[in-house]
Image (cartoon, rainbow, N blue to C red; front, side, top):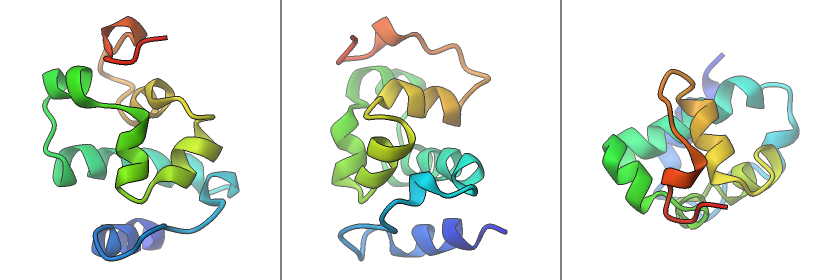
Length: 99
């Protein structure tokens, strides 16, 4: 079930882009939050405070997830973070590039 997630985990630093139009597939509801969590926790090692200060839309593009932020979350970094961490109370105005 988590095949795409494991492929992403093993290849995030080795490839330029990952699966075009991934955000359109049915499995993206499961895999997109996992990819976002893996990026934040394992690649970037962000704490909650770091997320508020350093987390940007460009973070996705810089780490081969431009398709995810563009297609699945309609270019909204806030939508991606709230989908990945629904239990945390993030507010749009707490982020660097607040709307």
